[in-house]
Length: 349
Image (cartoon, rainbow, N blue to C red):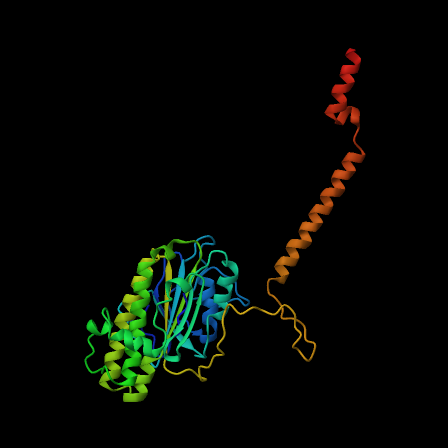
C-alpha cells in the first residue's frame, strides 16, 4: 500500500485494468466514456486535477478543463493490485487502463512541497506491505502514531476499535499470513480516516493535500489461494465496500472538495520496483557527478520566466526613453505649473 497525504458503477462496462473516479467535486469535470488512459499518464492526470501544470499536454478526453481559481483541496489515489476491477457501488466515471506500467506520484508531491512549502500541506506515502512510509508537512504531526510496520499493524488488529470486530471475515483467517496482510491494509485505511476526523482543521487550510495508496493484499491472497477461492472473493467484496466508505469519508471531510481515484491492475507489465528516497531530499545545484560534462536538465518553466523578464525589461526601457524625451523637450513656461505660477507672481509684483 502506497499512500500520499494529496468511481466505479456496478453497471460499468469497463473490463480489464481500469481507472475509476470514485469521488470528485462538480468543478472537476470527468466525462463518461470508454477512453483508455495509459498508466504512465496518471500522475499528469492527478496534477491537472489539482491545478498544476505538466511538461506534456494530456491528450485525454476524459478530463475537461475546469475553473482556474477553483481547485480541490485534496487528491487521493488508491492503487489495488491483483484485481482488474472492483464492484464499487457508486462512482463518477470509469476508464480502461492500458499499458499498466508502475508509476508514482513523486513529481506531484514535489510540486506540492515546492509551491506550498510555507503552508506545510499534508503529503503522506505509506506502503504497509513494504513497510515504507514518507511523510511531509503537517502529516508528521498527525500521522506520527499511525502503525507502519506489519508487526505494528498486526498488534493494532488485536486492540480496541479494530476492524476485525466489524468486518464479515467469512472464509478469511486471523492467523494466515496472506489474510493478515489484507486485513492490515484495511486497518490502515480505517486508522487514516479516524486520524483525519480527529484533525479536521487540516481540510480547511489553503494548501492542497495529496494521498496515494497501493494495496497488494488481494494480490497475495490470489497467489496463496487462487482467484477462484472463497477467500479471494470475500476479500474482494470487503475491499470494495471499504474503499467506497473510505472515499465518501474523505470527500466529506474536505467539504466535498476532494478527488478520489481507484486504479485496479491485475499485473503490472514490469515488476513494481522503486528506489526508496525522501521527498525532502535536497537537490544538487550543480552537476559535478556527470563524467560526460552534460548540460543541466531543462526546466520547462524556463520559457515562461524568460519571456516575463524580457518583455518587462523592454517595457521599462521604452518608458525611460519616452519620459526622458518629454522632459528634454518640455517648455518650463507652458508645460510646468511651478514655473507658470512663479511667472504670474513676478508680474503681479
